[in-house]
Amino acid sequence: MDWARASAATVVCEEKGTTLRDIVQGIMDGAETPDTVMELLGIQNEDKGAESIPDIMEVFVPVVNAWKNGACGGGCAGCGGSCSY
Image (cartoon, rainbow, N blue to C red; front, side):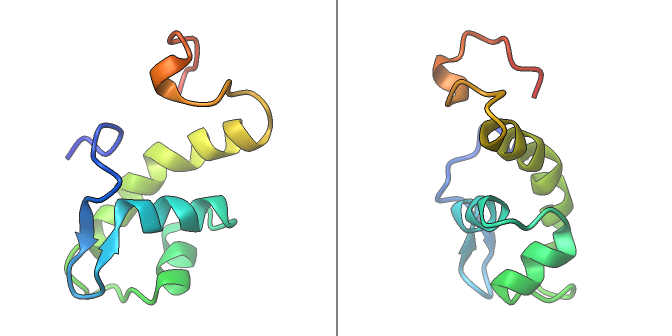
């Protein structure tokens, strides 16, 4: 799955009803590792979809950190492609 292009409403963990939006919100709230975001959202390693979380984190942690630190102009759709994330 191309997580950078996936809809925020994409269900990642069906058992818990967790969406990509939930995981990105967890990152925005300070989770920087798969274990941290899984704990925050109540996802267990054996839950279907949990195996996707490291890939999602790999895409979104750098983007969220760049945004929080002012290195991002506020959204990939309008940034002109200068971001390396």
